[in-house]
Length: 65
Image 1 (cartoon, one colour):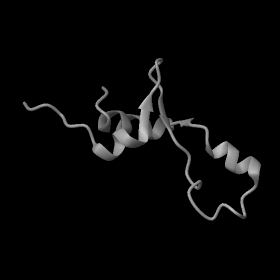
Image 2: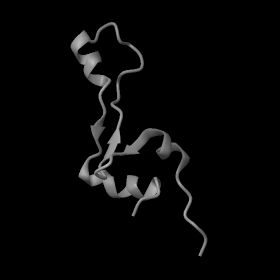
Image 3: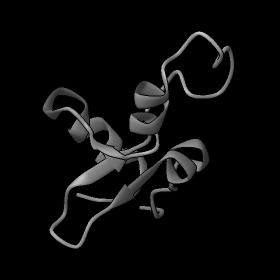
Image 4: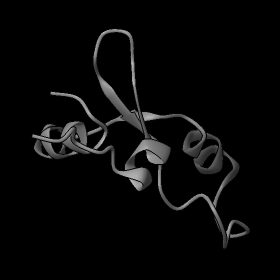
């Protein structure tokens, strides 16, 4: 059985914390920023966790589990 390959798009978009949580960046921060408030744009900078519904698929794509 050959090794599983890591999904190239996923490895650029997700990272794993030391405790094993999968983190992702937030959407809506790349363009049309003039109408968005400073507070909203500032909150886009922070990462957030992947939802439980998606975690299994993301983990498989980035080579975990």
